[in-house]
Image 1 (cartoon, one colour):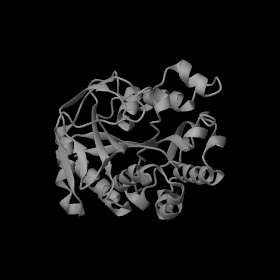
Image 2 (tube, one colour):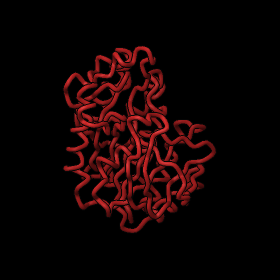
Image 3 (cartoon, one colour):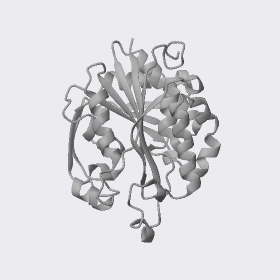
Image 4 (cartoon, one colour):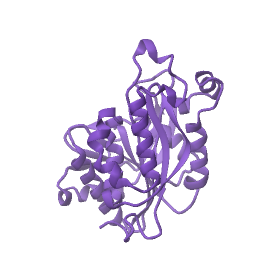
Amino acid sequence: MGEIVGAGLLAHVPTIVLPEETRLELNEGKEITLVTGLNQLREEVFERDDYDTVVVLDSHWATTVEFVATAQHRRAGLFTSEELPRGMCRMPYDYPGDPELAHNIARFADKHGTWITAIEDDYLPVYYATINLWKFLGEGLPDKRWVTIGVCQTGDMEDHLRLGRALADGIAATPGRRVLLIASGALSHTFWPLRQLREHESSDPAHIFTPEARAADLERIAWFKEGRHDKVLDTMDEFWKYKPEARFFHYLMMAGALGEQACTATARQYGEYENSIGTGQVHLWFDRPADGWTGAGLPA
């Protein structure tokens, strides 16, 4: 039986993969703590031997008629971002996938009233919400498998929770698998307009698009640290006013896999809460509690 042994809500902003001198130039001579936080997370979590597969819930990959899980035996190539090709250009990547797990996740679609397909096409695009985090957390660890699942742009909150439930069942059905989940994406997510954004490139949270969005982000960070996933889920209507990235679907998929409102895992923060041209960014890591994600063993 497979199990989820850790999970994180992690930021993937393009600035983390820029050269250090460029990062310092954009951030008033200081390193952004999203970089130092990922370095610390790698040392404390991803360099351990107690997991074998990482599943990234990618807020940048939007499908339309179904959820898709990558099922290639290996993914390798050079990545250039269509969004920011100057800053993310010809980045090499090479990592094994986990076809068995991807197909097992898809097997549980009907049980949970959703649609999931495992795709083995080697030409399937990759996105920087996966690649940027792999560069920090996976590169140089050649035995760790990585699988990506995209959000579905026609889905709603319930659809993404259902994906998470199927994900948990697929992991449980894969013998011996020990999995880390990454919900790759931001909190509030409104960019400054083009003619203004260069005035707001510092990581200082004072540059978050509105004080109200900053307050909403900080409220949820506090709830995560208290293990109050129920409060986060029960106030999604309120949070959507601040346009969380991908409608926070990356987190909702993770929550569906961890027991939803019953999840009691508390967050450990790596680095500071920071701005990225108006958007709220943070790294939060959840270790599996000793008594399970819901305080009563693993979710069914």
